[in-house]
Amino acid sequence: KSEAVEFRPVRVLDALSATGLRALRYAQEVPGVGTIVANDIDPVAMEMISANMKLNNISSDRIEMSEGDACAVMLANAGRGALFDVIDLDPFGSAAPMLSSSLHAISHGGMLAVTCTDMRVLVGNQPEACFAR
Image 1 (cartoon, helix red, strand yellow):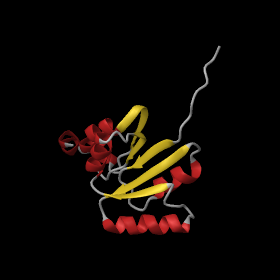
Image 2 (cartoon, rainbow, N blue to C red):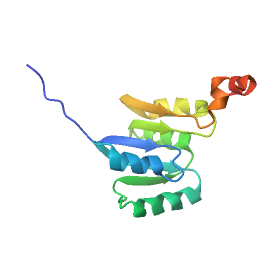
Image 3 (spheres, rainbow, N blue to C red):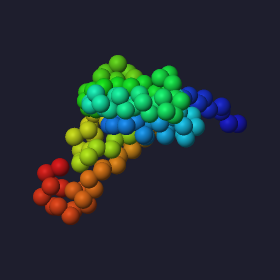
């Protein structure tokens, strides 16, 4: 006898959103996604995310804009029990400084998606920088 599984909308954090591209793609392309938080510390990024949401006809009830430091946003959400099912990290450089905060803010069974734009540092082409980061 199988038990019914209850599905709930997935909560996503695009922690370093910049133009909001990934947040927009989650909203448009991934079934089952509820709220997406598009975060960036740069006020200009907030303007770009807003403009891109309008261009793509995505309402603010789907994508919530957040302006702040990614680690602070993750820890603040974790502190109030508002965990994320998916946290998407794509820093320029190493994601290492954000890993602890992201582990506090991810739900049990959640997915941490990490992509590092500056991969040369992480794959060993620059060993000194890789060790430092």
